[in-house]
Amino acid sequence: MAIVNSIFTWLMKKRIHQIELFMKYPHDVQLEWFHSLIDSAENTEWGKKYDYKSILTPQQFQERVPIQNYDTLKPYIERMLAGEQNILWPSDIKWFAKSSGTTSDRSKFIPVSAESLEECHFKGGKDMLSIYCNNRPNNQMFTGKGLVLGGSHQVNQLNEDCFYGDLSAVLIKNLPIWAEFYRTPNMAIALMDNYEIKMDKMAEATIHENVTSISGVPTWTIVLAKKVLELTGKSNLLEVWPNLEVYIHGAVNFTPYREQFKQLIPSNDMYYLETYNASEGFFGIQDQGDSDEMLLMLDYGIFYEFIPMENICDDNPKTLLLGEVQLNKNYAIVITTNGGLWRYMIGDTVQFTSLAPYRIKITGRTKHFINAFGEEVIIDNAEQALTKACCETGAEIKDYTAGPIYFHGKEAGGHEWLIEFDKQPSDFEKFIDVMDQTLRDINSDYDAKRFKDMALCRPKVHNVPPNTFYNWLKARNKLGGQHKVPRLANERKYVDDILEMLKSAAA
Image (tube, rainbow, N blue to C red):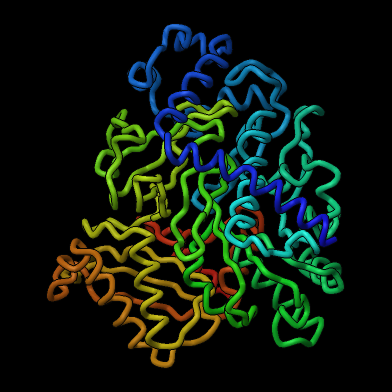
């Protein structure tokens, strides 16, 4: 296995030169992809509608094609689900990544072309390994197996030739046969729908394997880790998998989970690698071991545009190209892809932490914020405040959500938080005060509204019972896969729904 490991590591590192090229010539690479995408789709129904043959520049593209979201593309995608082809993209689309966050009760079916599989998702997976091998030349990752927490897989019954599932399931089903030898558990378990049974089966199937890497969302990884420790009677994961060396994660901010992982994997040599991989595409990889910024991957068949958040509510907001963005400003991402998504707003917001090369951090969602009183609290603010409060009170957070408390009579408004702790704070009231003060320190709009409680009162925080969010997601049939608890909402829908559930359970 050592020889195989050396060969894999060598192959992975060969890609580094190409990554360095797009880091050095980002605008040339993006322009090349722009022309490739436009040329490829000129004879599709969409390409003919907007006369792609006559589009010569990104500026013409911006002027002619409106910003899209899932609802505007949905009529086209529904026809593709029924088997029609050459609508948004020229090659046959037979796979769809089912994406359904808790922000919407509707499922989204994102088309996954053969090109987006190979040139984007799989390329991103390989680059992730390339970057790791480059940063850790003495790694032994390929001497063992990778534990992958996948989604669930179903066949789309509307058309026998079309398949859909969570993105991870689509990727697993399309991986080359040799990849199956390096991952655990087997596909039958990895793609189970019932997450409660799945966690038990995964723990049983993996405890005797030589696991060297783990890939998955932090929340479900912790659930699995606890099952493994319960089953084996061990005190940490290194006692079960002594050769475990890297954890690859994404989808949610890792900061609130970091302390729990240090306890589960008590090693200073453990490598943590964050990726930014969504159903719509693979966007970023943490390329430096000492920084949690992610390198924006520019040669994956994706052309990028960015909407400044102050323009997000405009009818057809002006977008900036990569060369026009500024550091530390919030932007909504707009993508054009080799899967047939054209000027598509994915709903994520980012800040650029570096412009040479282009590195980003995810700051939240375009719909996940609280701005009921002009306070403009985004997820990045919330995560910073909670991290500081945890640090000062020894707490560990499992999940949370928050929403506004509207003005009532002469009473000021406020924010209502539901927080589920893995480890309770030493002083709950101090936790609230530190969180509140940190929000005031980092967000001047919030601070102004909090002045003498005139517009915003001190946050109201509920210390909810264990498994509250798990039970809520389960009741909504949203366990596992792409489903996540909405962190912030500019309405009371989620807060009220969970409080009502708790009230009914207590009755």
